[in-house]
Length: 462
RNA sequence: GGCGGGGUGGCCAAGUGGUAAGGCAUCGGUUUGCAAAACCGACAUUCGCGGGUUCGAUUCCCGCCUCCGCCUCCA
Image (cartoon, rainbow, N blue to C red; front, top):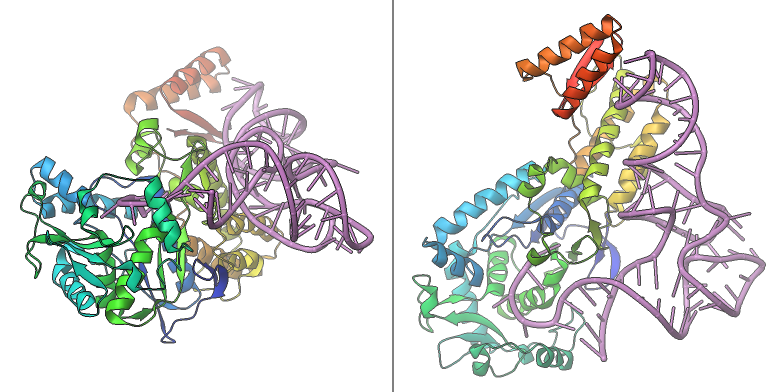
């Protein structure tokens, strides 16, 4: 598969370093509240990425961290009167539930920062030993950016620009007076009163690790010094990933990630999401509005990951209709089969080959979706004996996209009064009492139920 | 100021040096007592604007307008 690489700015063929397993790391969530659909664009794209690799027959090792010790988690845990672990465990469970609803595969390894404090301290010690970090008087430790000439290579920024950026975005932070250079970043933060009990002892005194360090330490632990790919939201390119590169290479050597994969931010109603604009949606928000998580997933796949995707509530309706159309198309294809089709992995994608090709060309999910519809149309003209192979290909692609199609709902839990109205309407219709029949139908519509007449009866849909 | 990504039919969104995928919506037809649902069909001479290169550009080059993102802890 070909994928765009942020560092070299070109599409590159992905091949595992060890020739066997593609090992990659994704920056995971900070668990201090429910994740929003913007966060999930990143995680869903990671998921599709992995599924495409696996569908193509590659073994994968997917590592995704949990950020459970940083400014926000500590601040909010303190405010809630809970221990950091209690507080973050709650939001981690919520995150997992949302991921499951969205059809995302759980990573093979999901390490938490809180559980890797010793590894982070060890890494800082190594950095100081190697002359890349220094402790300040207050017990904080900083990385010396000037000690690493390649700093800025990933984000294509040079030091002068970094300093300029700083002067234009000056923020009040006492820590900065302790730094040798304005561009240096913190590895260890000395203990502050507002941290409460959330501190650990270290050679530099009580404190806690800086945010960037956790990923470097956990990558070292689970993937070593050289691994296949690192990914995250585009905002992490600078400074987070830039800092990771600096920390990791200066402490352990090696080349760190061979490929960088970044997902562009989701926009809402044409602009940035923000709480104040009231357009920051969580999965629960959208489910409460009557949409499904799978519809959200479809919307997130409907734009290319390197382009800003404009999310609107209306797009969820389009997603719902599109998913139903795919489900119907699949049903038609399946009805041509003499025997049930097994879900064997297709290596020839038949009429859906263009969709598979699109996924393998820089993960072009919108093009793949388009070809899925076109393929379905082409499949209608196929002979019945070709249906099995085409259906297998279609299913393999759905699986690669992580899409689960809606199934016709069983009309089991219809309230008695609704059932009664529908029955009376059916009788009136049989008696050709159109006025009464239509009046009852309107009544059902008002109550939120739709009647779907069939040749020999009717169905009720909520 | 620096770095980067866009502007394609009513909306969303692919794409290509050779004449514009797909989804939603809309409109027709079949069906229906009328609807709904379903099925069939129609739907951009045109890709922000102005130049240039070319047999040919939406696609390459130049200029302009415009929208958006990032620039130290935000996926």
